[in-house]
Length: 111
Image (cartoon, helix red, strand yellow):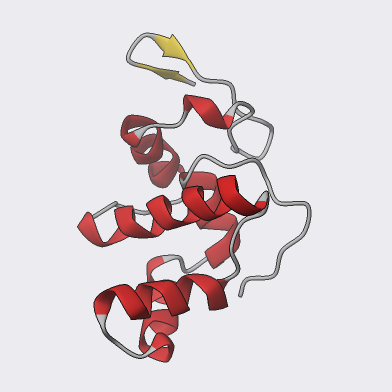
């Protein structure tokens, strides 16, 4: 895919081959491929996922993300989890990893 005259390599499923190429413009294109229009509420999730991935070498599951977002927003993590599933209707891990610019997880569930 070409973004701002720079060729960004993706795999057959649409994940970045080189996660270091991720930026907000790339995220917008990847989100569009998932039929998601990004709003302000999405960016803290991607930021958390990228930091977590860099620290732990794996994407955070929905429980970790809901717990952190609940803490950050001052709401119950169950409320956040419900919101995450609405924001990413075709699978939290699949869609967040793709849009956040991570490689495809080796295995995931929709939760």
